[in-house]
Image (cartoon, rainbow, N blue to C red; front, side, top):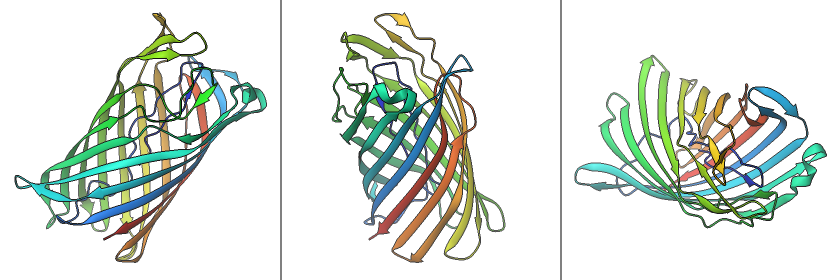
Amino acid sequence: MAALAMAATFPTLASAISIDAGDYTPLPAGANLGALYLQHAEDTRIYANGSRVAGGDITQDIGIARFIHYTSIGGFTVNPQVLIPFGHVGGSNQMSALGNNTGLADAIFAATVWVVNRPESNTFLGITPFIYAPTGSYDHNRGINLGENRWKFALQAGFITPIAPKVILDLAADATAFTPNHNFGATGATMTESPLFQAQGWLRYQLTNSIDLRVGGSYVFGGNQTVAGVSQANRQSTPSFLLGAAWFPTKAWQIIALYGRQTSTENGPLETQRFNVRVAHFF
C-alpha cells in the first residue's frame, strides 16, 4: 500500500489509500506480517484545471515499514497495524525552488475487521479505519515536507473474490477526512481540505502456485483545498494504473514488483512513472 503525500508551500494534493492485490486476504489469528515498501516516483508536469502550466521535476523516494498482527475479536478476524513512512522528496529543474526534505512522514495506525471471511471460496470483505498522526517532519517555511501537520481519518472497504479459474478480482473504495493545518506556508495560514475519495481494482492471474501477474487501476477525486479562507480550486481528478507480479520464493516470504503512472490529472503534479517494490515476511 501507498498512503503518503508530500506537503509543500503551495497547496498540495494528498494521496488516498492505495492497496496491493491480496491485501484483504486475512491470515489466521496469531499470525504476523512485517513488510518493507520501497517506492520511487517522478512528477514531471504541473496542471491547473486540466491544463499543463509548468514542467520541472519532483522526485519521491519513499519507504514504509509496516507491522501487522492478526487476532480474533468477537468471532471476527482483526489485524491491528502500524506503518512508519520515511524517505526523501525533492524538486529539480523548474521545481528546484521547492528544495527537498528527508526524514519521517506521518505515522499511520489501522485495523481491518473482516465481515466476510470465506477461505473455502476465497471470498473476503474487510473494513479498515485509518488514523494518520502528525508525527512527520514539517516546517511551514520549507517548500516540501514529508509530514502534513494535520490529522487524517480514513475508512476503506476491500473485497476479494475469484471470477474465473486462476483469476481473482480485488476491489476497494475509501474516503479520507482532514483536520485543518493551522501553520501552512510562509505566513502560517490555515489550510483546510474537503474529503478525498478513491476507487480501485485489481485483476490477478495465478501463473503458478507461487507467482501471479497483476494489473490494477485507481481513480482519486475530491480534496479541494482552501488557504486563509480562499479556495485554491485544486480538486483532484486523477486516474492511474499499475502492473507487475508477485512471487513467493518460500511460504514465509513474498516479493511484489510494480510499475505504473497517472494517466492524467486535473490539478497539481502529474506522476509520469512509479516503481514499487514490497518485501513481506510472514511469521
